[in-house]
Length: 356
Image (cartoon, rainbow, N blue to C red):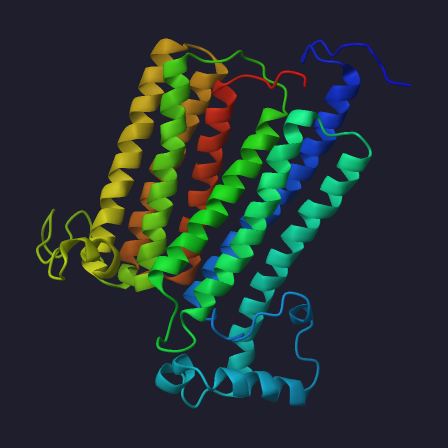
C-alpha cells in the first residue's frame, strides 16, 4: 500500500521521498565511479599508456591476456604502431604489461560505469520508482555515456597511425565530455536531495550556472595542456618565460592554431583561465553573501572559493615541480571536486524538484 503521509522536511509524499533517496544513492555511486574513471584516465595519459591496447573490443576486451602466448600477441600488435617504433623501441614484455594494465583498468571502469548505470535504471524504471520528469534525463545520460565510449576510441585511433600519442583536440574533448557527464549525474542526484533553503535569486542562480561553465572551460584547457605535454615547460610562476605575458604566443599561422597547438600559448591560456575562475568564485562569494546572507547558498559560495584557492595552489606546485604524477593526479582530482561542488552549488540555488 502506498503511504500518503508527508515528510516535514521535504513536503512531498513519504513514498516519493523514499524513492528519491534510493535513486540518489545509486546516482552518487555512479558519480564516485566516474570520479575514479577520470583519475585513472589521467594516470593513463601521464604514464603514456593509452595506446597500449590497439583494438576496440567492447565485449571481448573485458578479458585480459591469460597466458604468455596471448601476452606476446598483444605486445606484437603494440609493436606495429609509431609510439613503439619511435619512442619505446626495445621495450620488454614486462614493461609493456605496466602500460597495458593502466589502459585495461581504464576501459574496465568505463564498461563498469555503463553496467552500474544501466541495470539499476532498468530496475527503478520497471518497479515504478522513477518520476516521469526523471526518465528522459536518465536516458539522456545513458546516451551520453555511449557517445563517450565512441569518443574514447576515436581519441585512441588518432595515435595508431601517424602519431606517437593521441590528438590533443580529441583528448581534451574526451576529458571534457567525461566531466560534463560527471556534472550532469551530480546535478540530477543533487536535485533529488532535501533542500534546507529555498531558491536563491535569479541573479545568484545565473552566476552560479556560469561558474560551472567557466570550470568546464578551464578543464578543457587543462586537457589541451596534457595533450601537448605543455606542463613540462616554462615551470616558473608567476612569470612565464621571464614575463607576465610571454612572447612567442602567436608564432604559428593562422593565429587561432596557437590556442590549440602551441604549447606556450596553451599553457598561458590555462594560467589565465585559472585567474578568471578564481576571480569569478571570489566575486560570487561576495555577491551571494550580500544577496543571501547567512543562508546555505552563501556558505556554499564561500566553500567553493576556498576550494578554488586550494586548487590554484596545487596547480602552481604541480607546475613548479615539473608535473610529478602524484601532484598531477591530485590537481586533476581537486579539479573534479571543484567542478562537482560548483555544480551542486548551482543546483542548490534552484531549490527542490517539484513532485512529478
